[in-house]
Amino acid sequence: MINTLSGRFLVLTVIFVMVAEILIFLPSIARFREEYLLARLERAQIASLNLLAAGEMIAPEVEQELLRNAGVLNVVLRRDVARELVLSGPLPFPVGQTVDLRDDRAWVLIRDAMSRLINPEPEVIRVLGQPVMGGGIQIEFALDSRPLHAALLEYGRNIFWLSLMISAITAVLLFMAVRRVLVMPIRKLVDQMDRFAEAPEDARRIVTPASSVVELRAAEEALSAMQSQLSQSLKQKERLAQLGGAVAKISHDLRNILTTATLLGDRLESVDDPTVKRVGPKIVNSISRAVSLCEGTLAFGKAEESPPALTRFDLATLAEDIAESEQLAVAADVVSISADIPSGMQVRADPDQLHRVLGNLVRNARQVIAATGTPGRITMCAHEDARAWWIEVVDTGPGLPPRAQEYLFQPFQGTARKGGTGLGLAIAAELIKGHGGTLTLKETGPNGTTFCICLPRDGILEIV
Image (cartoon, rainbow, N blue to C red; front, side):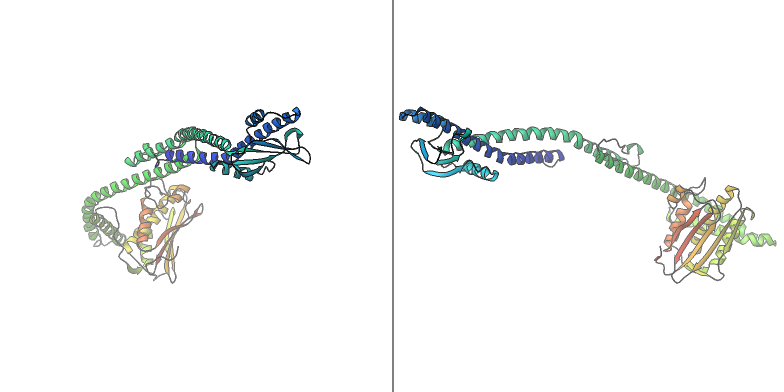
């Protein structure tokens, strides 16, 4: 029980209540002792005044009876200058302490009360006080400490048992309240977490925030957001795994088809026609890249990319090839595609992978612009410095929607056009990352979109 939240709360409640009772007990027992002595003072004063009013000697038996009724051993009354022993009796012990009731400082009262409570030794206490109702200047009396000690002990025991009962009742009530308000909702939340852990891909097991407690509500909302994100991520990974298996199967059959297409493309090179000779090599190159991609997919058994084979090549030639290939799919007066790259610029990268990245960026821009029905332009440009090559794909399209910008490089989410899967940009970013570089969205808006590729010269990206 001590290891549970409610059990520890119960123990702490009992401790704190007892501490509070102790703080209350100290002034309380000091007040009890003061009232005890004041009551003896009043009785002693009444007995002495009655004796003075009689004006004659009384029998010793009557005097002792008055002293017993007052609870004192003797009484000395000072009405003017002179002190007068009004009532007297034998003292069983020597005077061990003198108490002045006119000193009402709190710490003095608490000190004397605790001293008398813990001191069981019998002794005579001499008490000084102010007579009530103007019955004199000063009154003093002596009393036995044993009845006072016994009264303080009884009072302390009563306070102890009362405090214990109050603390027990308070602790039980708080225990039940904490279990109902705090422990049970936390346990329910833990049970929901365990239930979600059994099948995290099941969206029906996501926590629905319902607590009326602000802190628990915040915890439920945070847990619900985390579970939703995790469930979505697991579904996405499952889709990627299924896609990888499907691609591997398709690639096996597609490779055989592309092999035949390659043989037919080789025959086109022997045709003596200017258009065929210009288009034929592009078809052959495209088929060769498709065959290589299929073979790579089959080799790995899933949709993972092989490490880039870095070589130096002319970037302008590659960009012009992409521009010519994509321009074949659309009329130039609808979308104009061009490459504005300095002749002879050599970059160090995997030409096939960079061709896929640039081709994907240009193809996406072409499809978006063509869907708007408004003529547009796509330009590939590049420059270099001492640390990296910078390649930009600039279009005059309508820009990317907010959701596409938020999940731009996440599979199945960052699609920039209707009907897209969102895989192209995610794959392109991974390919450039494999080169040690970055693919970023530089700007987008109604006036167009610019993607920037950074390829570091040393293979280590130092520029963000």
